[in-house]
Every structure is written in structure tokens, then in C-alpha cells.
Image (cartoon, rainbow, N blue to C red; front, side):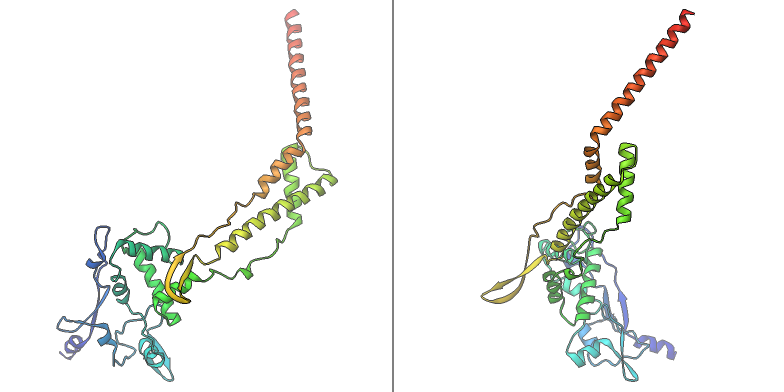
Amino acid sequence: MEENENKDNEIIFEEAEDLLNDNESLLNSKPLVEAIDPEGNIIPRANLIAGYTPTPTDTTLTPFGLAKYTQVGNTQESTYDFFLNNFGISLYMPGDDTEELNRFKTRKAIETLQTQLEDAGKLKDGSYTKGFVDKSTRLAFQGLLEDANSAGKDWKSTLNFILTNPKYDTSDLPDKLELDYADLTNQVLNTVKSVVGRPPTDNELEILTGILAGFKQEQFEGELTNAEIAAQPAYKEIVFEGRDTGVLQKTELEGFVTPSNAEAKFQSKVNELFKPEMDFNQRREQTKNVANIIKSSVAGLRSIGG
């Protein structure tokens, strides 16, 4: 009897199904998480958290991206309360994702968010339905809430920071290409053998290795240029009268190049340099074939003549 009474006094958290599909709007979506009292009434999350003292065995919701509890001395305190009481930060909890996403009232607004989530690396192109908060979009947004909790910021400023800052530090990129000349030499030997039918002379090997190294450097510089451009932020914040507005504008990244293919260019160069020899070899082979045909014909005529 006592066990049943304890169960009746527990706060039960129910996770509703995500009912969104291509034909449903955000206004018809159900919260992922609801707190319900024993009489079946929904308890607002703010009322649920305020003044609540957790224990390691209760059903306190876990903040996105953080542990449920924070060790404070010899005791455990709910991470939500710890951040709120010590830093004045209200962390995002399960259910907040639905609350925030339901603020987007038009398909265009949802598409804008999806594009920004994609540009931020949270959402993969082709994995979501544009203009609808489907499962992929919701999971991407939850990932953003994890970043916001970790940074102690709201999700909008967190997303703006991601989009308006370089994707990575370009100083980490190599400033020059490290070439393996043993590997280059093998590539030259194999290419010349396949094209000409013989290994290159020592002089040819030295010249051709230098040519291949140059093509490799050219390809590297093109790839480096593209990497530096791609690292730049895809958005800039609009400034009005010297003040940041918080509104983002997508920027067009320009200057991308098509890196050359070092191996293909080298193959073409070898064909060009050894064309006279290859033509000579081809003519010599054709002459041999003609001679063999004549010999065969003469031998045939002799056998007929008896």
C-alpha cells in the first residue's frame, strides 16, 4: 500500500511521439517532454524546477549536453540549479527544443533556420524536409542547444557565433608541401615504362622528377587556396549606425579554384615529351608487321607452287 502511495506522489515524465510529417505544421506538434502531476495536470517546467531539491534517485530532467548532476563538495546538486543559482544561467532542458521551434510560424522562417543549421555543420544537406521541423531538424536543433548550454549562452547568440566566425584556424594549415622524392621517382619510373615501354635514363629521370614535383606543388597550392576560403565565415552580422543588430546576412565565398591533377598532367607531359620515340616505335612495329605478312604470303605461295 505504501509503495503505491509513493508512486502516486511521483512526478511522471512522459515522452510524446514526434507526430510531425510533411503535411503537419509546427502548431500541431506535441511537446517531446511533459511533466504531469498525479491528477494528470501538466506542470510548467519553470514551476517544476524552481525550489526543487534533487536527490540522485529522482527523475529530474537532464540539460541538453550536460550531466544531470554537478558535484558540489560532498553533495550532488542538479546541474540546472547549479548554473541558475551560481551564474544566473537558465539551461535548456528537454521540451525547450519544442517550445523554441514552435516560435517559427512560417515555412520560410523554418527554411532559414535549416539553412543556418546546415551552414553551422549541424544539419546535413538532403537529410531533411525544407520548411518542416522533421526529425533531422529537431535533432540538429537539440545539438545546437547542447552547444548553447556548454557555452552558457542562448541558442541564437550561439548560432550567430558559429556562423560569423571562421570554421577553423587557417594557421594550422601547412604552408608548404612536403614531398617524398622516393615516391616521386617510383611514379616517374612506372609512368615512363607504361607509356614508352622502357625505363627512363638517369638524365630523363632527374628532369621528369622535377616536373612531377612542380605539378604536385601546383595542385597543393590550389587545394590550399580552397581550404582557406572555405574556412571563412559564411555569414556576417549586419551593423546599423555602428551597432550590431543580431541579424545575419549570408556572404558569398568567392575565389575557389579547380586544383590541377598532378598525375594526369604528368601523364600528358610524358606523352608529349616521348611522342617522337613512341611514333618511331610504332612505325618500326608496323614495319615488322608488314614484313611478317609478306614473309607469310611468300611462304604460302611457295607451298602452293610445290
